[in-house]
Image (cartoon, rainbow, N blue to C red; front, top):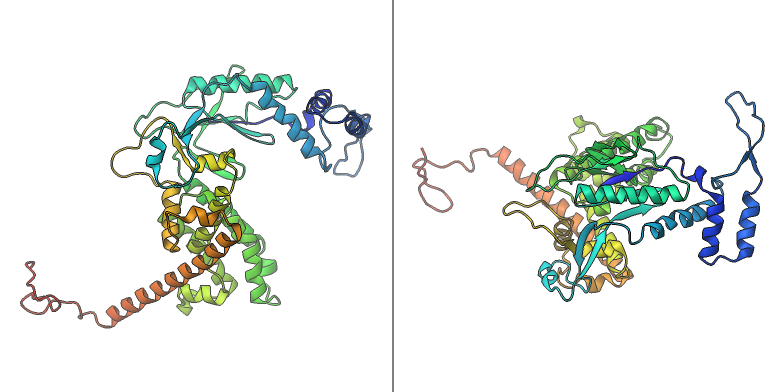
Length: 429
C-alpha cells in the first residue's frame, strides 16, 4: 500500500478548474457565478505573534478554509481525480463476494456463477488517499497514474510524507518494494496512521491498541487535576465525563478490530485503573474488579466491544449491495489460500463468537439485523445478559479460589494414591 499525501491541498485548488468541473457536473451557471463572486478578488493579511498585520495580498488559489461550503467544493474537485484515472489503473487487490446472506458459509463463494469480482485499488477520503496492489509493479504504475492526475488539476504530492507499507504473505516472504516518485524512493514504514487508525505490516492491531492506550491516557491526565481530582465534583459526574471523553478515545474504531485476548486484557487493565482513580479506590482496599464496575455503574470493556461490533455489523448488513464495506464483509481474496494449521483470527471469527456469546442464532441473524430497531434492542439486551453472566462467572471463580485457599488439603490424594472422587489409584509417586 502507498499512502499519498498532498502538499497544501486546500490552498492549492485551481479555481478555474473548479468552476469548469462544477459546470460539467451540471451545476447551474447562476450558482457557479455566486461561488466565483465569493472567491474572486479575495484579499488576506498575516497576523504575527506581536499583533501586527502585514500588507494585504491577493489570494488566487484554494478554497476558503472555515467556509461551510469549502469542504463540499473540495470534495467535488478531488472526486474528479477518479474520473481522470478511470480505465488507466492496473489490477488492484481482487476480491470475490456474494451478499445474499449466510456470511459464515464461505463455501457459497465457490459458486463461480453467483459471485462478483471486484478490484480494490484506491481508498480515497477527502485529501487522504491510499492505493493498494498485489505486486510492486502494479503499485508503481498506480502511483504514477495518480501523480499525473493530481498534476493535471494543479495539485502536487508531498514526497517526504508519502509512505509505503508492505504487508507480505506469511507463506511467501519477499523483500520490501522500492517504489519511486519523481526519481525519489519512498520510505517503507512498519505502521502508518490513516484516518485515525494505525495500519501495521504485521496485519494485527497491536500497534493500534498501544496508540489507543496512549491517547486515552493523555486524555485522562489532561482532565485529572481539573475534573477527576476535584473534590467539589460528584463521582457520578466524573464517571460521566470519563465515559464521554476517555472511553471514546480508547475505543475509537473498535467496531472493525480483530481482538485477541491479550488486547482485551490491556484495555480492561486501563479501564480499571482509571475507574479506581476516579472512585479513589486504593489497592489496599482489596476491592474486586466486579465491585469497581458496579460502583461506577458501567460495564467491562469486553461487553462494550461486543456491543459496538454487533451494532456496526448490523449497520453494514443494512447497506446497499454496491457499498464497499458490505462487499468487503461478505468477501474473501480471489487469489491465495490460508496455510494449513493454526490460523490468524479473522473479523468474521470474532463476530461469530460475539453472536454465540449473546445467544443470537448464527444462521438467521442477518434477517434480524435488517430491522434496525429490533437489532439494536436485541444487541443491547444480549450485551447486558453477557455482562451479567460474565460477572457471575468471575464471582464463582473467586469463590472457588477462596475455598481452595481455606482448605489447601482438600484435593490432595489420601495415602495409597487412591482418588477420593473416582476411586482409581494414581500411578505417579
